[in-house]
Image 1 (cartoon, helix red, strand yellow):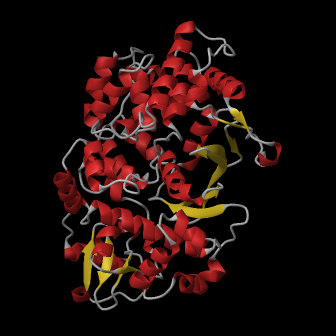
Image 2 (tube, rainbow, N blue to C red; image 1 turned 90 degrees about the vertical axis):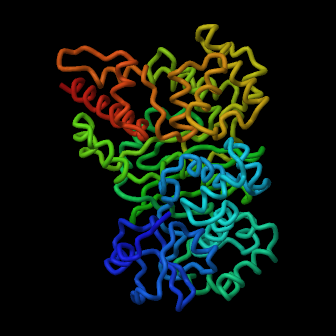
Image 3 (cartoon, rainbow, N blue to C red; image 1 turned 120 degrees about the horizontal axis):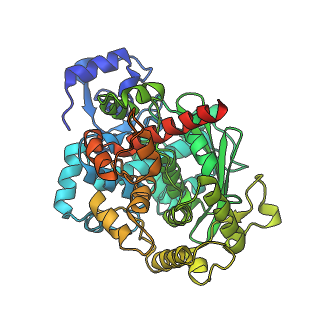
Length: 494
């Protein structure tokens, strides 16, 4: 990725927050790399280099600045460049794809060769896939040192280091000091972890938190998730262990996430999932700028410039929710999902029910696959679809994993019994995080696109109309849904 030195340096001199997360500043005289908003004295132009990612700066032998904390910058790497392959690869890396496998396996999952994947990473991020994974590990550990009082051994485990010795050696090499020295320098700002690990997760503003929270509130599965005031809470399970998360807005363009989970090795995956659910990697200015070129969407973007695409915590959970919601209202589907959870989900113990409204874990695929689902009053065809998807996921836990492209993902999903075009696009949009997924048969979208005469377009006509919204059709859909919901609310109030 080419970075114009003059333009980047002007952004650095101005400490322009619009470039935070888009570029990193390497300072040759100090050997550190910074965010463009770093409060330190601006170095001379001849002494700095600019990098498209923290991984590129790390690979160049630079260490993270202790003042501006690059690990706290918005994670915008997924929106740099134009390669959707790199976007999908980064999502897999964030979910731990390189923790137990190599770059060859990662490339195979993306349907390309290993050399091509390395070339794409260097073109768009200036670093190799392995360097990206290593940098994420180091920066997560550094954030845990700054923001928690976890013991160093726990931090090493949580960040994915193989051993405490390797953790100490890595920090001594990068920072020229042991990890404990970083904590002593920042102890006054660290928060306790007695009630869970609490971290700040930054995003690029603006962020329409209220609208996203409203979307999740309307669809919260009773017993599993809830919106309490301005906080989203839910139960989570990973590899047989379970816990809870709580996410809320915090000052300074960030969310505050509190994670209570017994196995700290699961922490990176949980953080990655929170980022995806709340769409923290999005660049709202780039997306909104593109969509606003359409006269129809321009006023919607102006009204809600920070609108995000709400993600889903788990692909199986979302697919079940989508099947339950076929041809019935959102409220009715939510009620059915609650019945399913209470009939087949694992209840929390009395001592675990510390968060109001959280009583169960969502049922495992095997539990649904082994049941006739008689506890739910619904058409037999829909019960058969639930059983089919449960058996498919039980047989292939990676069924909802990232595919080589949107077309391949939709084809794979549509091959499953009970999954039609709408459901496949909806899953791709919320679980696979495909920014161009678009459920063109959705009645809400068709209603929102009705003309002055009240005529709704056909799905084919809507697809043709949506061509100009690519590659951000998922965001256009959320804008239309949100505007339609607001209009219906105003009509009901009247």
